[in-house]
Image 1 (spheres, helix red, strand yellow):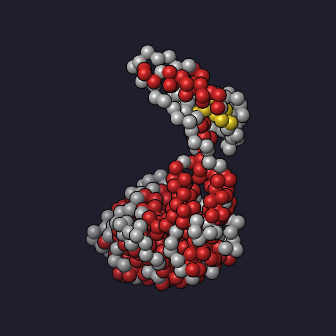
Image 2 (image 1 turned 90 degrees about the vertical axis):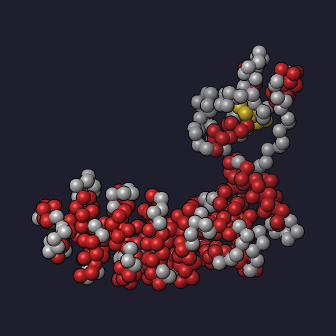
Image 3 (image 1 turned 30 degrees about the horizontal axis):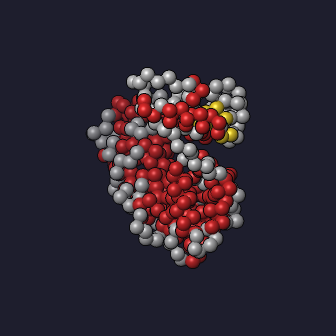
Length: 410
């Protein structure tokens, strides 16, 4: 239309998109916008002010359909259709919170629940406005209740759709905190899902771990203290699966779950017994993305705080080498965790083999290099502590640069 001599009335143009409005709505400030543009402006949090007047707008603004302006725009488009102007159809009625409340009710009836689930899945994928109304209507809680019911009935029908909806709309932290009494059942149900077989295995299990992450990160200490061995066996099982069986986001969610459970000694022991240390090292040997490495090193630090964890760490031939390699290659957070892991190994499990291994894989050299960087004071102190603790042994080896090492152990 830009190449044609057609003058568009200014009041037909959306102030945000600068395009002809297809569904004009008026905000409480009196300014009219195209519905999609103003909703994206508000829902994505670009600003809480009216784009034109800069007056405050609530995040969920009352938008009134401007039917008169829409009819004028439609009539003008029809009149100028021969000049290449596209006709604008009458927009469908906007879906609101009450539509989703109706769908939630339909979940209670066997004849309509699958249709309701499929519609919820489609609407959640469509736009941010739908997802906002779904949260307001209580869809996250309804989906979790549906998953618990499937667990109790040992039925997987509808799980794919329910988990997809949860993944798309997320479980708001405020809502997750309101489910303390149901947390045990929800956690058991999601762990059960991880053991089921589905046609869309990758996405279903990734979505299940994502939902589990949302529940665990807001769970009370009482819930986290009561986690069972099977819980950790299933999560570690997720980590042992290659990315052809679970998404990268699913792997990171599983790592978050383990990290959130680490502060309790009982949980750390169950992780070690479930093979978590070996699984984490193998995952890290695959050179994952930055955030994955930070999570892995964070968990390994917690697990190496106990004797069994350190024993498993040293049992894996690649443990010391891969942690050493990550220093100065990922991020300051990764450096922090890596040095603390090596500090625990050096302090509590330093056999002659370990001391020799740290020299052979370049740990000593890497720690000396780290001291030359502008890192945190406490990290430098930890690094020097490791170097001092076994300097007498390392200085005996001809391959070590004695000048560099002695510079930092004085």
